[in-house]
Image (cartoon, rainbow, N blue to C red; front, top):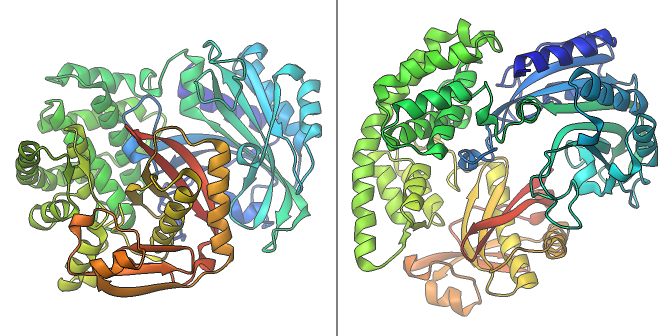
Length: 585
């Protein structure tokens, strides 16, 4: 069974159970500037989940094209994708838990033929806001799920809400057992060892959370589900990664034949970014230096970088585009319909980038060689900026090449340098360089301030050694690297999160002073990368909590930040950990 057959089975099953099949919304949201791309199946349906009547009725099913930009840097491993497809069925005040669970169990076991023993589920364990979801567990048992494979977890795992306030409720997640050995006696669906893979999430929206944090029962109860197509396709075919399925394998094989030197990570990046770029262009996207256009430009240019890296001639790019349209055309007719524009757009962007790469990469290599001769291992923000200003060389490409060669990169001052560059430029007010800390708008400024709170909280919980080693901010999240020799425990992360949110609730005033570096240090300000500062520095003070030397900008008081939520903690490099977090407003 391939991906298209799974999609059709899903839509036909729900059509036969009274659901109207609605079309996928475009990747580029219509009349919604708040997000760059459609990121989940529920995104286009939010008004109807809030009570607006849908013209197709109360039972809906669809496949939704989605694109998430948070983990672009992680693409190249065995699982991350930027573009993916989400299958979903929806009840807008119609059926609820009983029917939803029955549909899911029947579709997985009868339509897809998954043995029951391969499945496990999780339910909400309850807290002061809502009771333990015994009802969902009972319904699963009535549908054949053994009690021993029903697990309970808290809000982090089994509760859904779109933002800080609004419709929300417990969810039940369905996991597929890959057959791998358990990593230990406590191995369960919450474990990240790879034995259990989440395939479907059924959200039961029965509560409303108000601005005071109070939960009340909704009048219209909804069901919102999401089944990842690439993931279920991979598992049903017994493959290790999505890149081993028919969606990617023909492209992966062609790249391997064309490559002068093989690198599976580079082939995955090329295959994934090419597909994602084509889908964005087919839905109206164009490369540019701002917003969605910058994401598209970044995807195309990263793909080209890796074509060069493994020795594939860029003359083969049109051939690769045609191959992908051949592979994916039956699933996405818009690729066939927009073929000429897709080829034209990507080839034009390729030509622009070739000149940038040729000049910038040579210059970067010279700088890396100089550092090696000096026995140094960190490329300064000033040098990263010089490469950008002089050669148009994107800072994320500089970072990638530097790290591939074993060098660290200091982007801490990059936003300050870039802002000065913008102010000097006549077009400065019209340009916006996306990525890193250089993108300055209300959202990224909030995240920038949150990194200061996070930094201080980490030092309070883990010790003063937990100093910042780097950060990256987008409109969707902050990423913060810090020195620490081991994995941060869940209890420690919970405490860090609590401390940050406490400072936000205190609504601390954020002030800025200019002073000499020596004066800043004497005042107790934290100073990172100490040899990089000029005669005068800016010191940002957050109430009585935090004081740091920083280029800014920051919010005026912490109360506007919303709720701080840590989404992930992982290793970044030897002795360095990485936290990814979001602000929910």
